Image 1 (tube, rainbow, N blue to C red):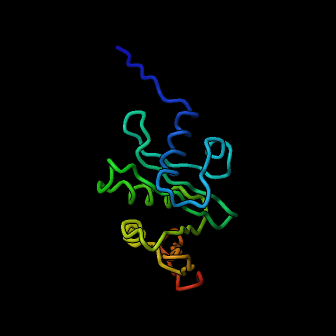
Image 2: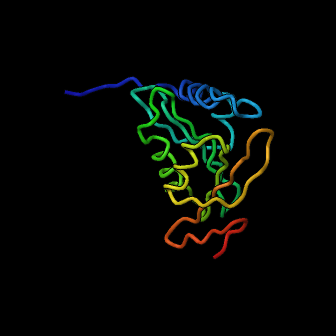
Image 3: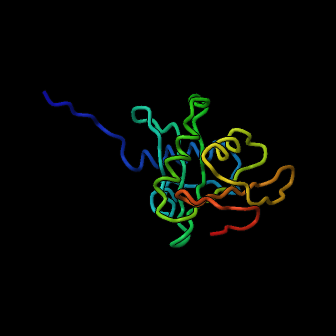
Length: 152
């Protein structure tokens, strides 16, 4: 017997991604459904049936560098390792030698997850009331990244 499943449309998934990313209220400007569908950032998603419960964007800046951005997990699904899983998958699927991401200094869970997946703190930017921490990693076994510069 065959089993058929009705899947969510791309527009529905993009709307869920935008809603989840914007829910934190930490972006300078919200992302739109159109930017998810047609922008340069590709999205990894974690689904519970047809509901987006976690997402992370990958923005390839050039042939060597990909930015990991917009990592977020739905509040009802936190503390289950989904954030770390998304980070690990993002690093694995990035087609570049280097990956980096920015994390607010008040996001202890994301900071801890970045360290757990082998990211190194390479810098910070001061903002009003917090810092933006910059994490980076070289893919593969040679992960020589030092404060403020990438070596190799």
